[in-house]
Length: 237
Length: 237
Image 1: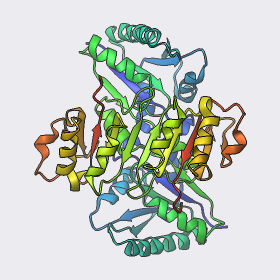
Image 2: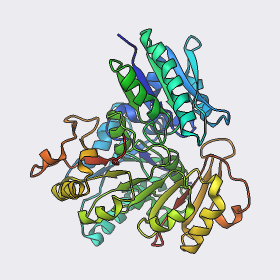
Image 3: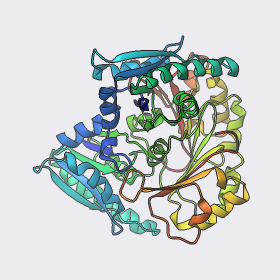
Image 4: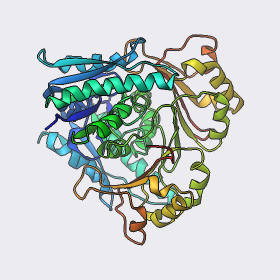
């Protein structure tokens, strides 16, 4: 029997935002798999988990690069899944750590898909986590959506003009990873008269946490990679 | 000094999906405020919290009705906020329990808004929680969204035809509270050829948990109030 593969959402960065279930799994598995990239932001998942780990647990670092080259990514995910399968075949349970929620924009999804196919007899369990935007809204005491209002989650805008078709439909939007397109996004929000109902949140719950309701002031400046913008509607907040 | 007001997201129903932070707050406050309605589904938040409570903690039941009559709702929220403020003015910290996440479709938002205005000196802290749809996706080992895919959260469709403008834009959608409009929603998904990429989830993580990838089979049947549909795109899953 192979070991069990867990995907653990460890939440947005505050170790107290781990769930009781994630904590239990974290402490019971012999192998903790941690995504690492050159940029280093994924190893934040390990920093969140570290206070809870025991010295005898094995840490398996998996190279999960950031790239626009899909073939390169696929090969890296293949290699990482191979390393996981090696441990699982030894009968060891493995928990893969992922920031935020494990089902939402996580490299865990790519590994899980491969393990389903390559080691179908392995049991897989996904443990959900608190998303960055839920933590940001909570930190600001700001409703993300109320009543029957729609909410759009926009992970990364390749072309900020795409926002123009979403803004009229959605009273609430979460724009994630806005750093690279920040200036263009703010201009689209200004043109749609929604900039004044938006708030920038950077590194929520972490060192260097930063909020701004003046999006204009951030134009031309470097934004942190872990920045998001919550956009609200024009109606009363 | 008034007491501190907490909004606690207790997650989707599984007591293990509470965060460490929600647990700490739950155990340290003298007053636990619990929403109750005639239908009873909100008191589920209390059932989630109950295993962790101490006998000396006061339970304050607040009537938070379900209604389409906005004036009636506003009066109920006013009354509930008044009861909370009475406790806060006594210097007592109060934690209001809410299923799922506290910032997303929670009656907590309406209470928080009132306390901000009526007792501005009170400190307010929102503690995020696991949403029903994150738990459902995790339970199914199903990515909610990957890479740069958009995700739409649709809380309640008054008119299921509204879906037709969202489906072409969004590869991933979460349709919450689908019970009342179930048949019409399934027909719109069928017409858009998306029904085969959809899954119905009822009472995730609770007694009577139910999943179905055959949405057609549920037509004409009564669906549980706590049902949602996750709709995926036509591309490879």
